[in-house]
Length: 447
Length: 112
Image 1 (cartoon, chains in turn yellow, red):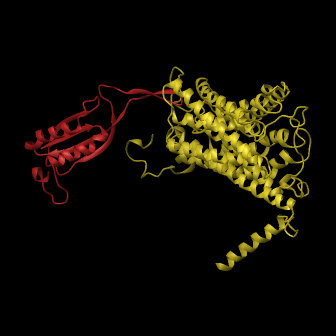
Image 2 (cartoon, chains in turn blue, brown):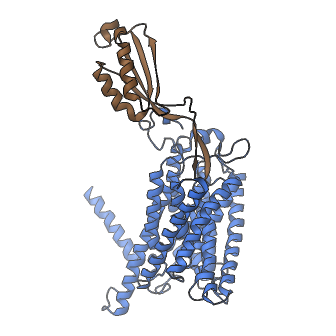
Image 3 (tube, one colour):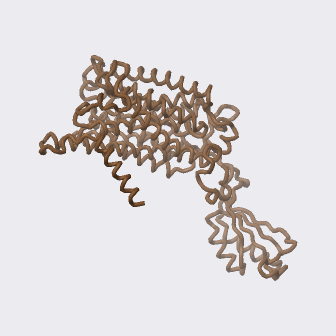
């Protein structure tokens, strides 16, 4: 047993030696080499924070849906990360960051070291850069599970997970963040610092197509078409999820500087200001609209503020972030109620939080960027660039994800049958309930 | 023998239990139930959408007592469970045909 364990460690060690490039290990420490080490350490820490956001998404989505589907939604959040890592490593990363044309990268499949050699990403090693980027890819992918919750076939979701991480998301990243991308190379470059559009609105638009093509959950609308509330089963889950996402965003936004720099403090500052403003205005809005400060909606407000400031967290100061987050908090409440009314059933508000507030945050850069913003006397050029990016990405994602979901629907099927939906996806799709029979006691059993 | 069934507000359970102990009751069964009475349900909102709470959580107490004790037990429950607000609940009795203590096989009033 011990020998086997040692062999295992040896193999891992050999693998590490083969693949890692200890570029600075033998050199004398210089300012540059220390900076490179700090850059890699910080970006790996930031990547870890972003990866942990998966837990936040899982809890928000589980909390805002019913107990009979809790295992299903947790597994979707786990597996879209795992599928995303493999798909992004094999194909997505090359499309996003490989050399190629304006539209997409065409080299560097399977993280090929002949494409992504030493220095390709400056101080960041390719593994460091990949882990940070794959965390973002997984974020875009996992947004959709909430909008499609409680009625989507598991295997169909699996297919979707691979495709968004291999193709739909990476093309957008190439446009926005790769040195060869067309949005970055416009006369007034499109600014989306950490991904209000690149990550969140990609997830938001795919959520919209998914929820639209799936149709609402059974029982969501009464015979007159009036929306009915389907209560989530755990508000504590949902709000702990919001807290985890809030903490994770300190990796998401400041990490997007891709360097250990004192500027990360300013980015963290705009991030937290917008989150707080979004919560307060969402709370005020729902309080006025429905008479009480709805708990989950205030949670959505935090996320709305965060999504909103993600594009401009580096270009705005605290005041810009405050206004951006505050408006996002109002927008999210009206958006949730709007999609409810037009029969697009989004149990967690993913389309509103990530799609609508992603669009708002991206446009807000054109208004509040301290250099280039309309309200700072720099004209409308930046705002126009922002609008072009928003429309282009929306068109790309709506069309490709629409085709994807329709293709899934006409082949393996997108939706579980009504019997499965009513009895719960946990037992029918996965074999056992998310909460064992001993906890499903009394009157709550089977609801 | 009578089966006394009482539907009460959940937070009054401790007071009712103490009152029943005081009245000499040696055992009772409690269940969490839901229901509505004359007040009906009420409307609330979740994420901006309205929904109706038709069934309000209540606690059901069941206790079997010998005939001479019935009035005292009903009085004890009534006084302990009363808050003077709507939804305090109800008490009713049912005649019990037979009663057996499983461990000893005692029957009738001996098994109370």
